[in-house]
Image (cartoon, rainbow, N blue to C red; front, side):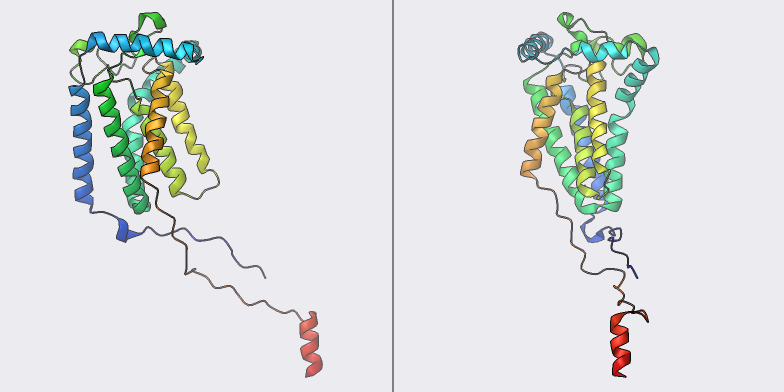
Length: 270
């Protein structure tokens, strides 16, 4: 007889789960710092466009494909470009929040690690936003790209960056859309054991194509986000998955049939 050999679903380690109220206050505080930091980095119009020209020239010298390659595919379909705009506008925060909630409930130890990675990545990104203001490719005349949000909708930003009181449109580098999507994918890959878990990488890949195709970010913005995440992950190692020492089943003793040699020998002895 064959016995079950797969490990059971691990129960969440409740001892590693931090208090909910504290976490809500902490996440809300981090979000507030994120918004205030982006607002503090606003302005610097001339420097932002000068840096945009440098990034565009560097990408072409490095042989990176033009961002217009991706946008050209989107512009072939009105529905596709609107779907990309909607993805850019609506997926970023809800997907990250759902990821943190699931980890908090099901993988508390991985939740703490992922929250720290997000905090470090976001803090480093805000510092770069202050140091290197950067106009996105949709504003750069040399890029020749379409502001798909304004033309096709739905739009995320106001038309004029100088009057946009809700967001800093000159905070293109690094792309936190891509950075947070990478954290979500990496966190789910580390925290789960499904044979299909690598498919979570489709989330940051799709996000990359969306932010480039809608002309909100350069390729280099995503590359810098990936580099910052690599540094954060090297500094903050993920928790190890505990080894199960108690299994909810016992291996049954082998059942001897009446035709087995061992049974025949025991019968002969009797």
